[in-house]
Image (tube, rainbow, N blue to C red; front, side):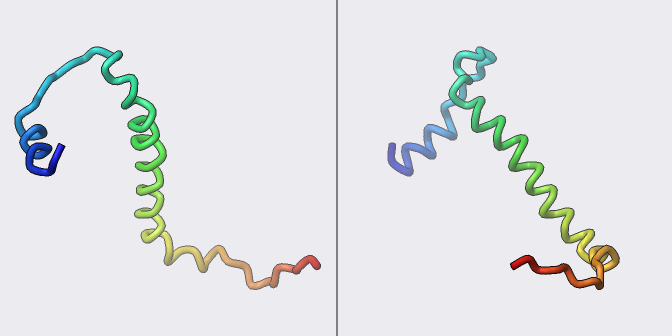
Length: 67
């Protein structure tokens, strides 16, 4: 499908189905996206909120290096 025909298809082709068989190929990537990707984006967004609090928990004692 070309760009114009693809946009036309998306804008006009609507079939609503609740049949699980039609969704079986979409379930793995949608499950991964809505679990892992959303939690990662929340963690990245939340890190900016607590970044100012991190120096409070840093230690001033040097960590020994193992050779």
